[in-house]
Image 1: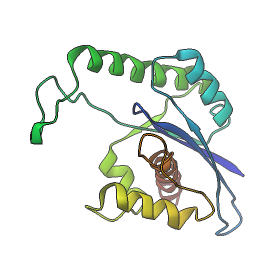
Image 2: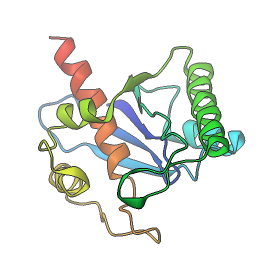
Image 3: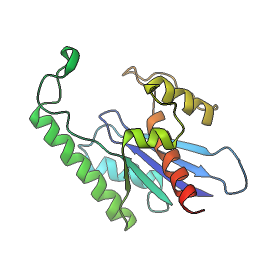
Image 4: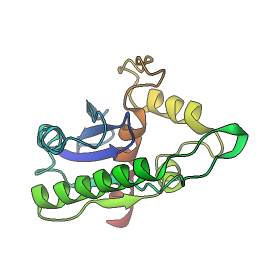
Length: 171
């Protein structure tokens, strides 16, 4: 059985570990750990260790970028400069922890690339990602969390994308 980890580094992000069976098409089991932001290095290190980062075949982190400090479209306020700096520092620390715990860096993947690799329909957004997660792991309860988001399905799909990309490149 191999382990593949996906990390959604957002404020309400998650770490997901897929335990993949090598014998044919057998449903992968899944573990999801909330990340609770990127500010607490000890908590992130504990979550990475609990997820099995040292033994993982692949570790894939979603690429992030600054939202800028301007007012976004449709009247939405973008991330302020201090918040963007804090988030960027936490993202760098997360990548450093993965490197330190594994001895090799994580793969970084753009959102559109992991969605394509995980076979999420183009243009379907979060509902499409949720539907794909339900297809892959029907036994998981993907109910809404207190934040109005579904717990960990993006991280699970990032792990699945990392696994698929590795499997495709090994052929």
